Image (cartoon, rainbow, N blue to C red; front, side, top):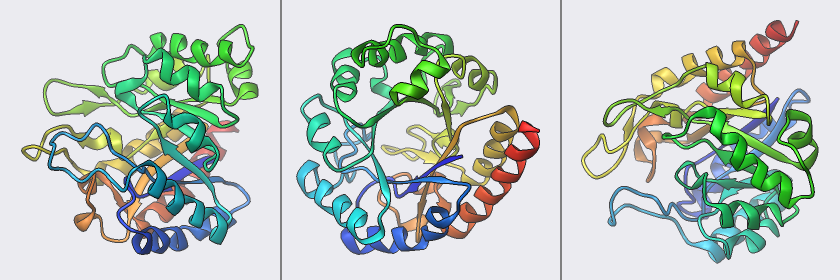
Length: 266
């Protein structure tokens, strides 16, 4: 089971290191393929005044320190084509944000690097149409078809994070996990799935108590990984605090996910 966890955005090195240290049990679990996640820039914040992060160069320096100190594999997202090569020199997974999942040049540049490419399904996308986003990466890496086996071999995966449901809300259709898994390994993003876009007047809200419920349901359906953002103090986080899990909640949830996955596979 892939587990991707960490704070939404790099706030400072002290907080980043504290969270990384707390997630050591995930990295030490032989049942888990762990990736530490944080963003150097949140380029799609609702408001111009919202905190975005330290930027590309300083953010990658912070992530490199985490890799050196803890030995973790890393994930970060990119928003512009010029960021792909530099980010891939530090991190192991380049993530294409949900709002950019159709951006051909961004996917192609990410696929030209050695990093795994994780494409988040847009809140506005039909799950079956994500096949074409996968194909952009597959063909860039010399493949021909978007199948689970081909994508897995070439290091390409998808992440489900919910679909727009009216205004300011998301809903998760569990059928999408089955549909998308036909053409790529699928990770379930439990914390962004409970986000309420624009729900706090100029910034997104959320309700984290539903994240474990959705994660357990997704595990029962069948997923290849779990994505969850966490923080030492979610209420004080500078981005996505309302839908983050506390660290102890995340550690307990991952154990339950592994148990459910084992039963589901058997």
